[in-house]
Image (cartoon, rainbow, N blue to C red):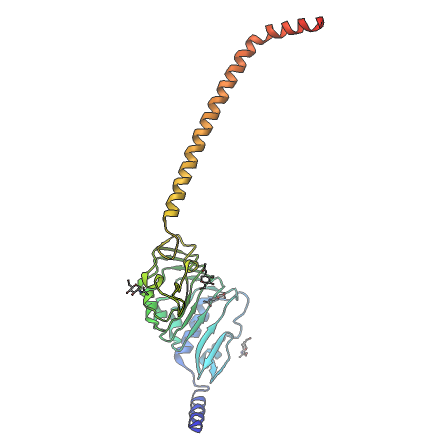
Length: 273
Ligand SMILES: *[C@@H]1O[C@H](CO)[C@@H](O)[C@H](O)[C@H]1NC(C)=O
Ligand SMILES: *[C@@H]1O[C@H](CO)[C@@H](O)[C@H](O)[C@H]1NC(C)=O
Ligand SMILES: *[C@@H]1O[C@H](CO)[C@@H](O)[C@H](O)[C@H]1NC(C)=O
Ligand SMILES: *[C@@H]1O[C@H](CO)[C@@H](O)[C@H](O)[C@H]1NC(C)=O
């Protein structure tokens, strides 16, 4: 049995080596085109390596991990990358993990990522991504990590995201999202704990996102009222104050005109003392 497994392993290992995978090649070539790399972190992402980025389990590309001759992990965090995410990234059809976090990548999250049917980890946090969260991400049924925090994403959290039953980490905090938090995300409980799986920290820092587990909007309404109250109050106060000031000034100048006589009296009295 073990011998069989070993033989199978050998076969798989030998079968894949230098055979170029046209899908991975198209994926890597286009991703390299769409990203900008001011620090030269992707120096060895060259055309010749795209043709055969993997030798079995060995990768020739910085940030890529191979499995059986195919790229299955791309991990390029914190490399000052800018530019955009090529829609052809979806041609890396064996991709299970994509981490482009903590760069300066802009543009949309390509809808085509929905054809990465093996994708389990998607970490695009701390970039400048804009546009909506594609509802089609729900097709990636194995997704268990979606981290999109600290971007410039707009629109609602698609209800379809709630259908990703394996989701164990979800963070869309600090974007410009709006609308209700999908019930299928907010009412999910953690394994064993019975506590909500995703707490407010997954959703804070958005423009107009509302619903459990975020604190009720009532807080926002009150603070608006409070601001109006403070505004009106200070307006009234300054009115009263300036009115009083004018009254005092009028009184002082009024007294001022009758002052000299009095003062004369006093100064006349002084020498006698
Ligand atoms: C590319 O760079 C990575 C990381 O620096 C290294 O592991 C890999 O061997 C390099 N590949 C080639 C072909 O030089
Ligand atoms: C995503 O990447 C960031 C920074 O690179 C890291 O801090 C964060 O923990 C990652 N998210 C998840 C859910 O692992
Ligand atoms: C969450 O809400 C959905 C839809 O309202 C419901 O079908 C599901 O049973 C709820 N799950 C829990 C754990 O409350
Ligand atoms: C929210 O959940 C995260 C992990 O998902 C945890 O680190 C954090 O402490 C939780 N915050 C609160 C207030 O429960």
